[in-house]
Length: 213
Image (cartoon, rainbow, N blue to C red; front, side, top):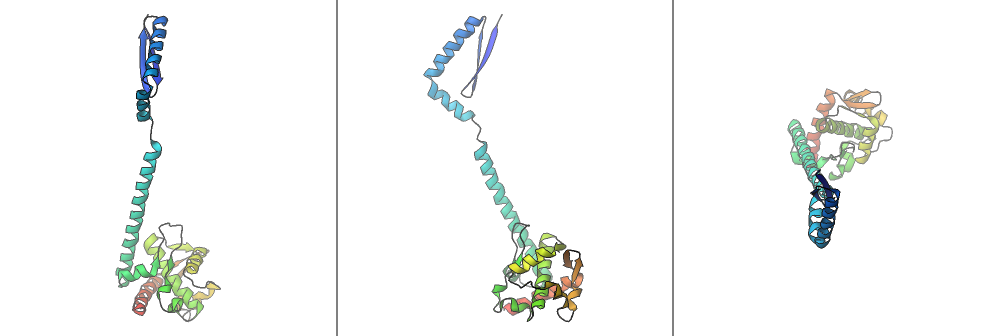
C-alpha cells in the first residue's frame, strides 16, 4: 500500500509518500532536519504567502476616499455652475456666497461675512433676513442636493450657521408686507420652495452680486 502525507509548513505544502508507515516516519524526520537547516530560506516563503489585506485594504480605502472627494468637488462645482447660469451671475460669486459640505448630513450655510454689512445685506429686520436667508438656503438644497423639502429644524440649523437670528422664525412669512408667504411650501414639519420662491432666489442672487461689487 502506498501512503501519502501532506505537511503544511511555513507557507508551503510538502507532500511525502512511502509504501509503509515507517517510510513515512523516515521522510518526516528527514524533512524536519531539512527544515531546521534551511529555516531562514523557508521563512521567506512564509512572508510571501502571508496575506497583506490590511495594506491592500488601506490603499484601496485611500484611493476610494480620494475618488469620493474628487467626485464631491466636481458635483459641487457643477451645481454652482448651474445656479450661476440660471441666476445670470458669476460662478465665482456663487462659490463665495454658498458653503456646501461634502457630507449631505451637514447643513449648508451662507457666507454673509463676505459682505460689508454682514446679514444686514438681507434686510433691516429679523424676519426679512430669515425669509431671504431661507429662500437662498432652500434653493441651494434643491439645486445641489435634489432635496425639495427639508425639516424646519434643519433649516434653522442652516440659518444659525449663516449667523442669522432664528428667534420667532415662524413670523418670517409676514416679511415684505406678507409677500414672503408666497415663496414657501409649508407641510407639517417640513418646508420647501414654491415656484415664486425659486424666482425670488435667483432675483436675490443677482441683487447680492451687485451689492458685493
